[in-house]
Length: 183
Image (cartoon, rainbow, N blue to C red):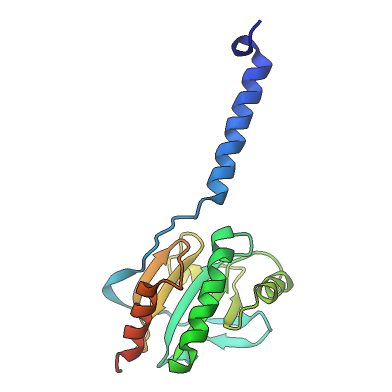
C-alpha cells in the first residue's frame, strides 16, 4: 500500500491541513482595513457609562469638546494587542491638543484579567471593561478590534474594522484635522 492509499495517512494529512488553515487564520489580521473609512452620514456618538479597569465610573459624555478614538478590543485578540502600542503613541502625541483614547474591553473575563492586560501593555489612556457588551450593541460592533474617531461635537467621523497602524502618517493627518476643527 502506498501513501495515497492509506486511510490513516489520509486522515493525518487532512488534520494537518485543517490545523495549518486554522493557524493561518489566527495569525492573519482580522479584517485588516489599513485605513480609516469616513462615515458617510452624520451620526451622534452614543453616550454610555462603564467602570474603568481601575474601578472608577466613566461617562463618555465627559469627553465633550475632545476628539476621541473609541476602540473596542479583547485580551484574546492578537490584532488588538498588536495595535495597542501604536495607539498609545498616538495618544501621547496628541493628548495635550484635546485628544483622548477610550479602549473598551469586551471580554467576558474578570476585571482583574483586563486590568492586568492593560498593565502589561503599558498604556496610559482610558481603559474600560464591558463584559455584557452594552457598548458594542450601541455602536454596532461586529468584531474586534473595531474603532471610531469621534469629533469634538460627539459625531462619528471615521471607523475602522480590524487592526490598524495608528503611527501611519495618514491617520495622524486625520487626527490633526479633527483637532483643528472648531466647534
